[in-house]
Length: 354
Picture 1 (cartoon, rainbow, N blue to C red):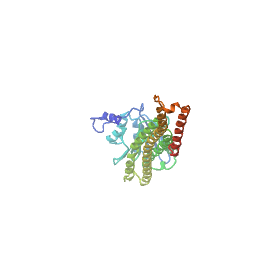
Picture 2: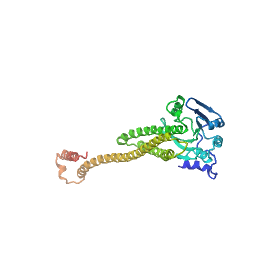
Picture 3: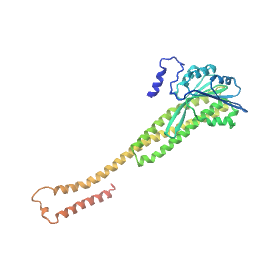
Picture 4: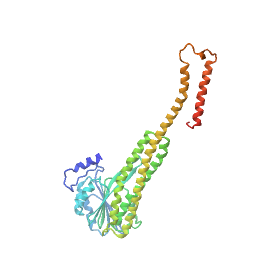
C-alpha cells in the first residue's frame, strides 16, 4: 500500500488528464504491432511509429493494435489525438495500479483488467495491467511487458480457426478478455496444488517454515481477490449495456465470461477459507505437539516424585533409623521404589494417559 501511495504522489497537484507514467520502467522502448484481418485475409505487422496505424481507423476490416511499453508518453498522446480518446482514459492507461473497470464513452469502450501469471521458479504471482479500447473498427490494447496470454488468439486469427475471423471487433474484445479470465484458472490450479500439499505437512510437521509459507499463501489470496473481484462488476456492466458496438450474439459470449468470473471468485473465496483453516490447523498442531511433550514430562515427574520422597527420607542424617540396621534394607528400598514406579506406569496405561 505504501508503494502504491508513493506512485500516486508523482501526479500530486497536476491537472486531470496529465499524462505521466507512474509505474516502474519495465521495457526499453515502446513496441507497436497490429493485426488487420477479415474473412479472407490477414495482415500482421510491427511498426516503428503510431502514425502507421492511423489508416486502421477507417479500415473496413477488423484491426487489433497492441502497444507494449508505456514509458513513451508521446505515443499515447498521438494515438489519443487521432482516435479521439479522452485524456482521462489515457491517464488511466499510464496509471498501472488501476482496479479492473469498464467505462462507456459512447463512441468507444474502455476496459481495464489484470493479467496474472505464475512464475514456476520463484513460485510467485505477477500482475500486469492490460487496458483495452473498443471502437467500431479496431481494438487497441496496452500492456507493460513483452509476452502475454494472447498467443492462442493470434494463432486463431492467422489460421482462421473458430469464428473470430467472421466476427467483428466486439468479438475480438471478448476473446481478449476471455483469454485473461481463463488464465486465472491456471493460477488457481497452482495455488490449489500448494494448499493440498500443505494440509498433510501442517498436521505432521508444523514447522516455522510452514507457517511462513501459509502467510505467503494468505498474501497471494488477498492479492488475487483485489485483482479479480472488481472484474465481476466490469464484465457485468459490459454485457448488460445495450450499445451498438456490442452485438447480441457477442453478448452471449460475454455472459459466459461473467459466469467464469463468478466461478473464479467463488474459488478464491474457498481458497481463502482453506488458507485460514490451515493457519488454525497449524496452531492446533503446535498446541497438540506441546501438549504431548508436557504429558510425557508430567508422567515422568509423577513417577519420580514418590521415588524422590523415599530417597529423601533415607537420605536424612539421623542416628536412630530402624531400617538402617537391617542387612537387607538397601535392596528392599530398591524393590519398593521399582514397585512404585511399575504400579504408576500400569495405572497411567490403564487410564490411557500414555
